[in-house]
Image (cartoon, rainbow, N blue to C red; front, side, top):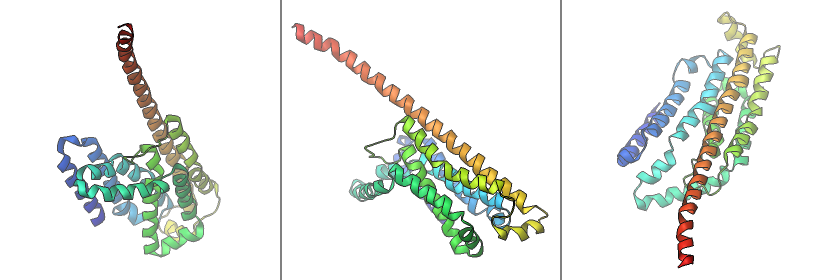
Length: 267
């Protein structure tokens, strides 16, 4: 709670320094991302995540996909570079440059896929239900993995020299979808409990833990991949439209310069 409030306050202070030069939509997006994290960790969702696997899966989707997407759409790194005094920008710029190796598309997909697959292995998953500190660490891993997932797609690096094109972004997102589909399908089709710890709470609530597990698998498989596919299509279309506009602008400049060049040649 305190960390989220602190992040929101710092963002608001930085955006207030830029005033009208900082788009309000980015501020709204970042604050919505902070709110998403708080909803996932400090609401009824967190109260039931160790009783119902379906609720736990909703929490995972918020922390893995929704909250990181909203946070990065707020462009916090660009805001920090613009709001910081010139003398302090160099340190942040060096830190961003060191992050670029980690933020390579292949590295991002590998880390995201590894985090999703490993944290859903039964031995690890059951351990998080028994040890609160490990459970908190799992939440942090999800947010970080989600930030890395969306980093190449949203161009959050202010000085990125090589960017994925529209089709490249769509292919990147599609390549990141199989781990979630694999886990979701496994949970949805498995006829016995994958995580036995959910058996007693399910009986206490009068709910079939296996049926709840099937719902959880459907959430990760269908809802998770739907979110990723929708974002992939959105950013791909946006990138293609932007490229088309840049091409039209280049052609317009060339058309304006051509008559001047012809006139100079005649004279």
